Image (cartoon, rainbow, N blue to C red):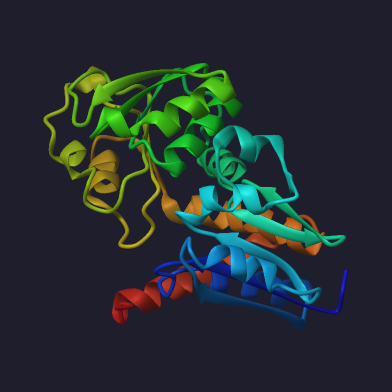
Length: 281
């Protein structure tokens, strides 16, 4: 492992990303004083050139949407999980090659496990984007073979259905906002505010999910998370997912494991608290 190295998170927009805070805290805890981690504005059009311009001083990159899918043809090697999900959120530069990984899936599994959720009997996913595809893979990891997925436009669910086939998962598409039984685990992969209808619904007690994972981490708690807590469900937030996926990225990029979760968590929570006082615009 080099004494100095560079890494960054790419996306557009990217100024709001919490990844620099988490990765820098990890480097400090690991004693990697010569390592840096930045946020770089980059869209799909700029991704090939940016990746091609990285030299031997670079350890890796974190990617946000829509770059997770766009990066796949630019990689020399892609782990099977990232191929199955249809997206890589991590690029590691090793031996002159670009290796792609998906840490969203193990991050989601770890976030659920940390909350005491290991084998839910059934699940519903809100949304059909890249995070929903990762959620499908996470559900497979915890033992489920099928999931209900609520989508706003079934015509745009092709990527999700293709990922389900690769993962060997069965998907039942339902209209967004459906009143059908939501399953023991409800995973919301939609932007802040879009899942508020779940919080406002008059739930029949037996139909309430006992676990809610909302991938939003700011602002927190979301209306859905507050409602889940009111009806006695376990509410897992997007920060927990972000933390655990970032920890896996740190391990992949540095070669050091386990990642220092405690200082990463403390730094991330401190930054989120700061943003509540002085929101990023």
